[in-house]
Length: 220
Image (cartoon, rainbow, N blue to C red; front, top):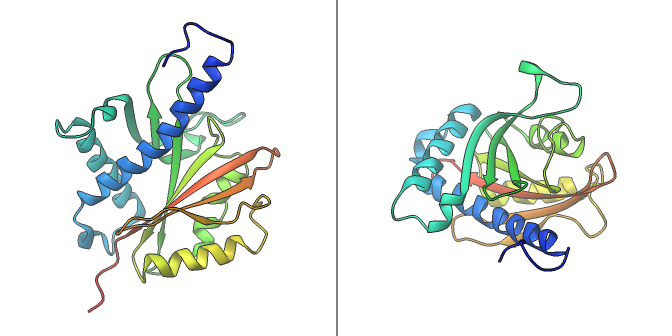
């Protein structure tokens, strides 16, 4: 499919195709990278350590000759400075993980902010001004109204945290749009994927992917 000929709608349709692929492929890259990690070794690790090793592992996926051919179209970066009006240099906010889709023309990307869950870290950080709130306020810009949140679960189960997260989002203080409450987007034997829809501070729709990755030690 290309946008060199045809009606004026072609670039829009092409963009929709690539942003849909970006969502699926970004999630897949994170899961594949996660599966390469020694999960138990991160049970007490700090957020930046986990993020750094996760990105390193994802990059190994992108250069692995056995990986799907589509990985060639993506670049994965960590701690990426964001271009925000009125904020310059080292003061710019930094996205924990950013996945960019390469093709000629505007390049859609999706940013993921990561927060630890457990070991003294609570949902208020995940949902607060440096987490989900950073997307809702526009502090972290998006290319097409879609963003991601990663929860590094270091205590209790993914089900425990996803249940608490759904209840918190339902309280009505996180700009959840009508009918946009957290719901399961995809179920995997290791990790379910959740999705919520919001209205950001500018009144624009914002879709958020929630992926909770378990680093908790197994229950004996």
